[in-house]
Length: 271
Image 1 (cartoon, rainbow, N blue to C red):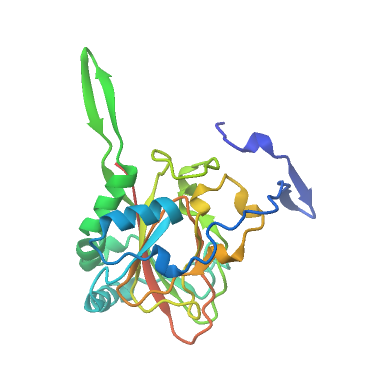
Image 2: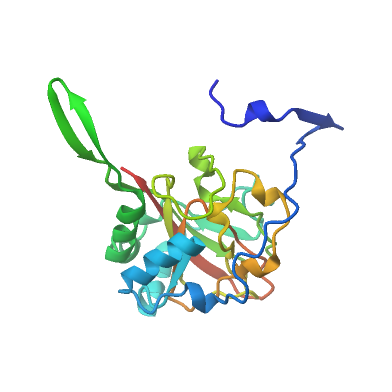
């Protein structure tokens, strides 16, 4: 069996439940004193330089007016018959009040055209994920490019009363183990995502919350304490989006309103 971490920890069993004892990092430090959401929000959809810099520095970038609000309505109309949940979901991986549409591009032509095929999303995925290398084939050396491909696409309807989801890195699905670093390093990312607000998203209705700068953390740093000024609930109007790296710790939040909060999350990986 291959492993990058199992050999470092010895499971404990207490009352039939298994635990792993990890050393807590007592202080993650303040990433940037006084930072607000404005710091990691792009001027507009065409501010490529600013978007790249925000992704490198904070692990995410909010993009206003990513799609037209009317396109959000069209997407929800196409997806409405396909929301579902399994009875086994009792808080893991989603709260019981949450329903989803998986493989959303198969159910919504508008998602495919307006979100997944969006030039900004594809360009950013290429920038952070695409890799070029030389490979030997017989006596010929070929220069190859990995390209990008859609890895997943899920739309979440977070209902009233849904609780907080636990912080996680999206790229754990690829068993990506990150080592702590002081600044962003190209070549370590396996996913780049875009989250699109199909309804207004705010702290009250369960907005995605993020820990800025956590894309630079080591594999288990989230088990320690961190300065709460690094935690943000992403406030987004209908049609806004957030681009983020697969290494950024993020989670859905509790919905304290009586209305559903609906957003779609789509991730590119290497081709």
